[in-house]
Amino acid sequence: MQEIEIELKNLLTKEEFETCLTHYNQDLANAKKQINHYFETPDFQLKARGAALRIREKNNHYTMTLKEPHKDALLETHANMSEAEARQFIHNQDTFPSLIAEALNRLDINQGALIYGGQLRTERLEFEEDGLLIVLDKSHYHGLTDYELEIEGPSVASVEAKLNQLLSQLAISKKQTPNKIARFYQALQQRNANHN
Image 1: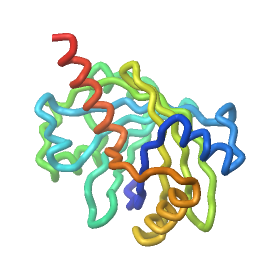
Image 2: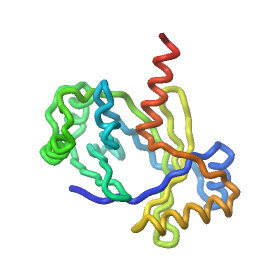
Image 3: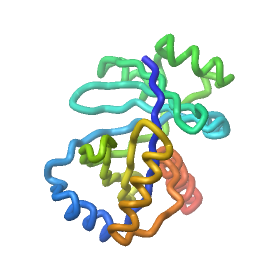
Image 4: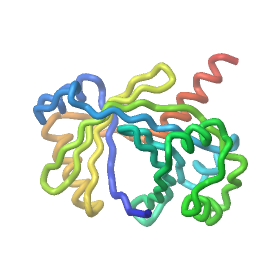
């Protein structure tokens, strides 16, 4: 299955995250938990193409997703899999589902070079407002915790307008926000550099 995703993100401080929780009358105790398992080549071929590969574990369901740039959005290619299949990928012992394999070939990614990088755990709250999906995430990876506001919608203009309105209304600073996989690998590289 493939879909186009239009989203904008803004990293939050813990205090800004709590402001958002209060504003939307949300409780982190009600958050859904998910784990992203990330894959990349040692020389970051996916990142160089603006792409990312993960397996998301949520409610005992496993979905492999390849994200790649598509105009002002992301093209997501999904393949559902069993827990056993997901575990084989995590141990670098399986072949890719055909839709994912085709997309990797189109990107000229050597599938044999992809290796498991680790996991990022997220506590996620999702709700709708003005026909847009509002997402509040608290994520844990490599000993770090970060907070994020994400807005998804049908157009870049509607998503951008909502993000700007919310940030202004709640007095939250706009921040350059790399996606989760970029933050994950950046933290991993930093951690490895500190251990050398």
